[in-house]
Image 1 (cartoon, one colour):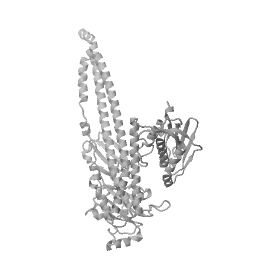
Image 2: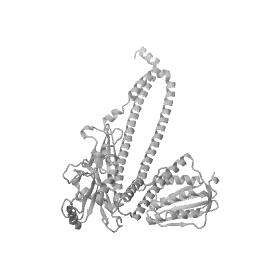
Image 3: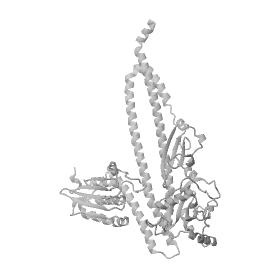
Image 4: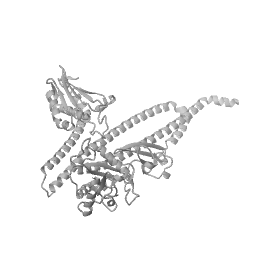
Length: 591
């Protein structure tokens, strides 16, 4: 190496070191930014998937609620005429409120010995409908006798025996076995009729029994069976109004019938395979649909990357080179600026996470509240419509039937009031506005009164509730709030006790009182023992057990406001014991 070159390197060693360090830092920063961009894209894709799944579930639930309401129409009336059926469905504005629905109908159950007589009545005009088809001997028959809307296309289905189509038959038999809504596998909605190229979709069935209902085992599930209300859903229409970020623009959706992705199980595809290319992100989500499982496959196209492309990568590289040239002069200031930037980034991520969690809690609550409030509202609307028709009818009024329907309206109104009271209690607790009215209260008497209020519900569920209280227990408490605590615990015991006995024990010593409510039902895992006392928390799925997930949260807040504490001991499958401990002298005795 020439002497002048060696001297140059020695003189500029620090500068070259700064240059080398700057280039390394620039390369590392570029890689970091690239990774951050990738993670943001993935998070954006996950958010779109979540919104898509939620939107589809809400649309399915809306249609299933309609089917449940029509089932209530048939269950609440001994005989539903076609005019009543059409008037009820027209009042719901199906085209606007229930997109994706091909129509809704009722198919009658007919035993082989009754087929000839039924066909004869139809042909003679004594009974509306259409003769059963296709012909042939079978163990049982069904015939579509009502359908709405009834047009030139759907009218061809009148009289069709859906038991002759394997997928529909399987769903109908499953509905009989479970007494719940049951969906078919992938079917052609007009398969077996003249139009063999019917649209792809599913059909959901619910069995309808006479007013006495289905008899318990060992009676066959077809005992007292009148038929089925059914709801065909065309996938093309169901998905046409689906909305979430990027759908059909940068994100494709495929829906498969079953837990696996198979070409023959494809229910819906938002685009043709040739137009998709290789997906940059892909995610499969399984959802339940009336006893079946659907697999949703979300694919992000290359255009999804282009839509979220930023100039950050080029900016970081350019800025890094500039900083490298100036790093010798501003090293310390850059270190301080970098530290401040990292702190700001960390704070921003924390605030973003908190906001995301708050939005998730809001969305979960709105979904649960909408479901819980919709159920009594739908039933209440149905009963009022039936009551209105009976009052406007020409036939003499049936006082007993009027009383039953008014009583049903009162029950649904009480349920709505209870749900609203729970929300108001949560609001008061959150603002710290819960006021206590302390007075001497006999806990033994209060427990027995609460148990008496549940006598009818317990008798209906076949549950025996026993109270073990050897002596009166008097303390300074708020009677109304303590009643609310006992009501929530007894209600939970009856709901999750599965018909097993419920034991209530009251004990006390010189300073405190103890109440134990023990059921012998499904129980809960140890890891859920504290979680279930949180807001909107539940230990079981809301699909099988209703409620807002607020009962135990409010119970814990009230017990603590009274100066006590609540705990639970449980073993899965063996029940749960909730224990409330309260100071006899009231909440002021607790520091």
